Structure formats: structure tokens, C-alpha cells
Image 1 (cartoon, rainbow, N blue to C red):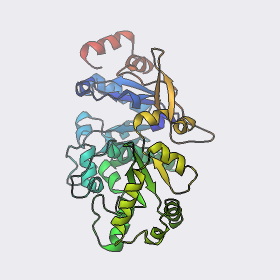
Image 2: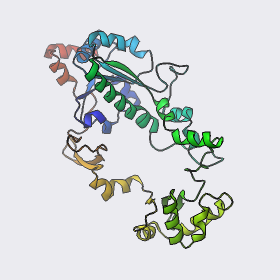
Image 3: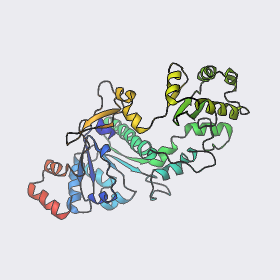
Image 4: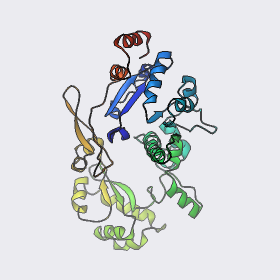
Length: 357
């Protein structure tokens, strides 16, 4: 989707048998075409090879070994198209003791050490409400890898295989955690570290109306302004003090609970202390900030109805990404792509009867 948003022609190829799990997510299929294809049939494989011959990039998400059984592995595809950039996204990578292990986002977060840092002390880890490993560890790293490989091909003329493991991507999010571990020798405790609730200056607080506000006054100048505004200048020098830590936390919890979120927004609006309201999805979709930044945009569906969708986060001044077409339906582009590849109407009807698509 990232590449499609920025002008790449993206054809998603999936087997209709996977529809049984009801995991087709329309929103990520904007700006794409979609083909239903059974690679276990000779005809399906031949169609795929024709597509590959015209392709710059192939992105696959099978477990290691599956592409070999299907006859669409890197070596096979490279023999058809030597300049192909072939990107594989898996949970645990193409090598190593766990390469064949099944997994989902929660498993990759857990294995990488990230999940152990989420939640409250002395309680089980909390699963985040978004798919961090899938999206950041897999999709975003794949996009980066593909762009790097494209640039390398511009210079060398050679394609290559990109091995993206979502678990690797999650481990790569730990540099700050590693830094503090190496500096102190302590293993970070869940919900009890410098940037996770241990201190008052980097925390979340409940307000009088049951909402929550975030405070990120890490730098001394921000903490100083907050303390002075709240009438506790004596806490300025105690920002990292372990003896007064609980006392300051209690004060902040009590203080922020005295007023509503809206009242705090009004009071803190002109204060430079790194604060922010904690919003739910409905509020995000209605937030003027996201409208102004075109991160929430209206899109017209095929039936003519408008709906909200998430925008393009990468803002390029000259070659901006855009949402050109609404999400495509499963297999919607199959016939048109087959026609483009040179298949006749009779051949296409035959493929349908044989279960090729």
C-alpha cells in the first residue's frame, strides 16, 4: 500500500481459498488491482510467470519453503526475470531455528522482548491494540528494503532477495532500552522504566471526567515549567529523585484528577511542557489536526458513498502520494489482467471452469 500510494502499480495476487478465514481487509487494498489465482494449477502458475516477466518487485508472505513447493521461489522467478527484486516477509525469517514456526503479531512482539515492556508492573504483558510487528516490523521494513534494492539496481543492474522477519523488526525497536540496560545493568521492568510510568515527568494521568492526558516533560525546562505552573517548584530539582518519586506521582495523579480533560487542554494550551490528550479512534477521525494534515480524508466508494479513510503519512513536496482509487474487491481485476496478458475470452472462461481463479 505504501508503494501504491506513491504511484506504483500494485497487483495483489491471492488464492480465493484464503477467503475462508475472512481476513481480506479492504482498506489496505486502495490504489491496487486484485487478482484471484490458484498457483497449484499449471495454468495458474503460467499466468503468474507471465505477470512476473513484467514485474519490478515481487512481495510474498508465505512461510519459508512454501514458495518452493508452489514453484515461485526466488531462484525460479529470477530465471524468468533476472532483475526482479524479490521480498519475503515472514515471522522469523528465512534462516534460523524458528523459520518454520507459525506466528502472529503477539508472538513476534513477545519473542523480541517488546511485549515484556508493555503493561503494568506485576501483571501480564498487555497486547497493544494495533499490529506493530505486522505493520512496522514487516510492511514498513519491506518498503524500506524494496526502495534500497531499487536504488542498488539503478547502479548495478542487479536484482536481489530481501529477507524481512517481523521479529527482527521488533528487536530493532529496542536501542533505547538496550542503552539503559548497558548503562545500568538492570533488566527493564514492565511499566517501570524511565520512559514507562516510573517517573512523574513521563506518564499518563486520569482526569476528572474519566479521560486521560499524557505528560512527556523529559527535558528539565519542560519539567520546570510544569512544576511551577502547578505550584510545586520544590519538585523541579527532584525530577529523577527516587526517594520522592512516589510522592510526586501521587501529587500529579491527584492534581490531574481535579479537572476535566477539556479544562486541562485550556489551561495547558500555552504551556510548553510536552502534553497531549489521549484520544480514541472516533476523536482521531474528527480531529482538525488530522484533517489539516490530510491523515483523515474522504474517499468515494464504488457505490458513490463517501467514507473516511487514513491518508498518506509521507509528505513529499514534488511527488506527493495520493489515494487515487478506492479499495479493490477480492479478485476484481482478474479478468482485466488476464486480458492484458493476452488471454482470450474463451481461455478466461476455461480458467474459471477449472478453478484457476
